[in-house]
Each structure stands twice: as structure tokens, then as C-alpha cells.
Length: 243
Image (cartoon, rainbow, N blue to C red; front, top):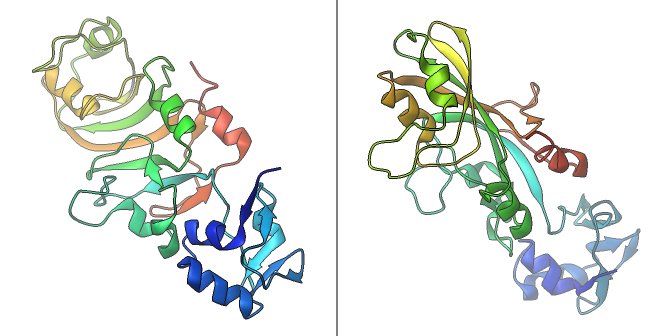
């Protein structure tokens, strides 16, 4: 079992500086299995169960690293730490913004795209999802400005479509029309604005875009825009279950 000094652990989880954590402990506000830990230099076991074994100021501890969560990204927010405007990280608990290792989105959805977004501090999970070798499918619901002409599915499936300004064709993609102006599009790559550029390449414009699935992991119907929840181990593995 991995252990960590209490003051370092809680400081890395955003509960304050190490000195501030030391004060919390000295005041008897940190409990492990119901027992006060007043010495912040004490090493405590760090595992998934720590979140329900420890409380800080009477509140259950946040999940320690590695942490992975899903969010229903709303429209109008950005995924980058560096872009201007409201960020997806602003929708998380305030102290999570200072966690170390930091939380990062697994891939991005642009400001005008909503839907399933994964966020983690687990570098191995992040790279496993975005690696071209993983071929993790991602499904989008696209609402189009004009009716499709019927040839788009074959073009996208051929694996020969070239996007403007690029020298390598796209991997085959699956188009499932739902109506004349709406369709599911499943891709296995993550090129810049890929879905929008694919439809632009066949003479159409995406009016609205929503991602509802990554691998076999679907956006839950009860997760409202702006809400998030921690992934279970089964949900994390579902990301890689659909090929």
C-alpha cells in the first residue's frame, strides 16, 4: 500500500498549503477511520478507499489521484487552460483547480460543441485514450445546415477523404443518417475540428455538434450540462470496449 505524508497529500489535493494543512490537523479537523490525526507529518495509506475513510472539517475527502471523471460539457465553455473565457475546470470544485498532478481534459471539445468530456490527472489513461494506436471511437450527433445528398456515408467510409491543408487522408468513419439534416458520425481520430471539416469537405455546414459516446461509454441521460461525476473502474474500461 502506498503511503504519503498527510500535509503533502492534502496540499497536493488542493486543501491549502502544507502549513495550512498542518493547522487543520493541529485543530483536530482531520480524521482517519474516525480517529483524529493531529500530526501532519504522519504517513497515511493512499488508496481508493481513502475518500470514505478520511474526513476534513467533517467533509469526506476528495478522491486522491489518480482521478478520472466525465463531464457533460455545456456550450460556451473551453477545454484549454490557456484560452480566454469560462473553462470546463471552472465547473469543478474550486480546490480541484490546484490539485497536483493537475486535471486535464482527454482531448478537447470546442466552445461550440457539447457533450461527453473526460477529465483526468492520470497520464497513462490520458495517453491510452488519445493514442492513435488505441483507435478509440468517438460518436457525434451533427445537426446540419443543409440536407445531405446521400453520398456522404460512402465518402466518409472510404478512408480517402482529404481535409483542406492536410496531406494524409482521414481514417474511415461511420455515418448513420437520422434525418435529412442530422446524423451520427463516429470517428477514430482527433484532428482539429475534424467533424466540422469533414462535412465542409462535402459541401455542408455543421449547425450544432454534440458528442454522446467515447468507446462504449455513453453520456448518461441524467448528467445535466455542466455536471460531472467520477468514473467507476468499469466505466473507464468501457472506453476501450468498442473498436
